[in-house]
Amino acid sequence: MTKESCINKETTELFKAILNLKTLEECENFFCDLCTLDEIKKMEKRWQIARMLYQEIPYRDIAEELKVSSTTVSRVAQGLYHGANGCISVLKKLNNK
Image (cartoon, rainbow, N blue to C red):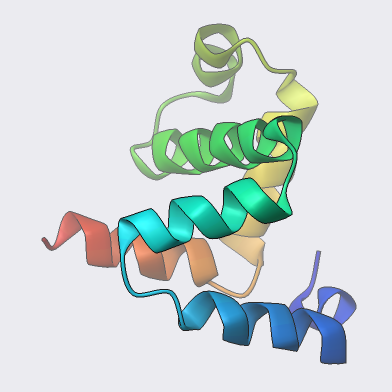
């Protein structure tokens, strides 16, 4: 998905709200209030996939370990390698800490 296809006034307002979160607890509370458990679990799984792809773990190994389809791994990889560099940027920051 391209940045242009997912950003509009409402998503920008959501992202501004997220940027106002200061602590891990605030973040946990915000997402627990806003999202269903299933939605959080799906984002959690996609973040795990992104981290594993960044570590150059093969697609098949990721799919098997996380019990997801290879299509899901491919979708995350598409965003990771051909998206807006948001995940790569965060992964680099986390690896430098």
